[in-house]
Image 1 (cartoon, rainbow, N blue to C red):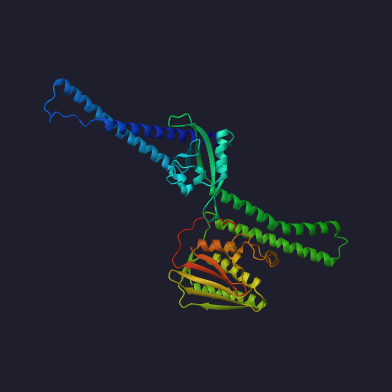
Image 2: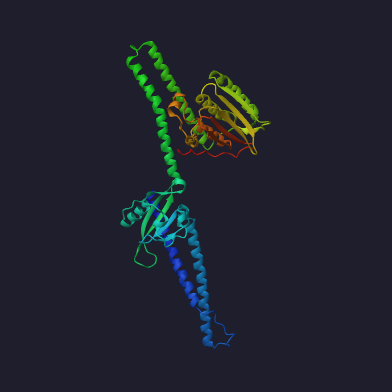
Amino acid sequence: MLKLALVLETVGILLLLKLLWDARQRHRDLRAALKRRAPYLIDTVVGPFKADWRATASAANDLVEALRAAEAARSSQLNQIEATLGSLQEGVLAVDEANKVVLANKALAALFPKAVDCLGQRIEALVHSSALAAFLDDVRRGAAANRVDLEFPGANNTSVWVEATGAIVPAWDGSKDRWILCVLHEVTRQKQLESMRKDFVANVSHELRTPLSVIKGFVETLVDGHREIPEADRDRFLRTIQRHTDRLHLILEDLLTLSRLESGKPCLKLETADLSRFIRELAEDYRHRAANTDHRIELQLGESLPPIPIDAVRLHQVFDNLLDNALKYTPPQSTIAIRAEVLASELEIRVVDNGPGIPAKDLPHLFERFYRVDKGRSREKGGTGLGLSIVKHIVLLHGGRVWAESTPGQGTTFVVTLPRLQPAPAAAVMPQSQG
């Protein structure tokens, strides 16, 4: 069915282009004929015409009037066909035997900016792609597949992907040449989503493999030799199994949380809350934990923080992740500060530590799923690699922003901004690309 739809789409576009070409030719013929016609014949300058001449003049006037009406009709038809062709989302390209462009619509120029006013130019000069040249050659030889995915270089080192179909058509200029008609449908977004899906599956598989392997190994050891294994070793094995089972549970819980946040109905329960009180309670909760790890929590609040609409449970999850990271990855006796101040249209909250910092090359990727600056150390600390991705989704659903600032050796600052007014209902947040 898909192949049939593509064939019908190509045939329909081909017929449309043929109509456009014929209409243009007739339009040119009519304009040339009108230029050769004399103006309307009248009998007021040289005196009244005799009967025969009067009939001839009337017939000539009728003919000129008919030509003008035909020109108006053809112009209207031409405009309608060009408007239809211009409204197509697919790029339409026709090249002659020398690969010179004989037809291109606006969608093609949107795909390839150099294709504006490209008629008469070779396609190789407009689109630098060996893949496209090879595709045109395959179409000429009848060896091209029904659909071919082509990758073109885009702006800022990105790629533009198109799904191309091509067919050989007779030249519309009356010659015996054979032209190639191509329909190019952009699939860049689909390719990006497919790549992200593959990366996600690979990352999840990798994250689950390690605890499962450990659990499987210790369980097999206990099953095969539990009678001979000393009690102390059995206890150590069981505790290891429990620890890795807990890790699996955390990963699955974080994955479910991300799934809910990315759904069309994230179900934020926004209520106007006293942000000063919220932050003070948060700091008080963490002071006891910080004392156990020999850290210090400092609180620096600006004056008169206004109440704002927040989902307190979700926002608590944001700062749980940020403060947990600060406690895990900064050495003992480090200071962690929570700062909040009012800006023009939003409130800014900073979680600042004086730990080892994060390299600049890692900062743009911190909020990607499963991204870790130090992979081995992160797993030792029990992180799932999903915490900061959850942070980003929750802040975006509140209508805010989040980012990290850091200099190696001088600590790290995570900045969260929240709008002072209630945000519009948030749509699903699409997963971020890896890198």
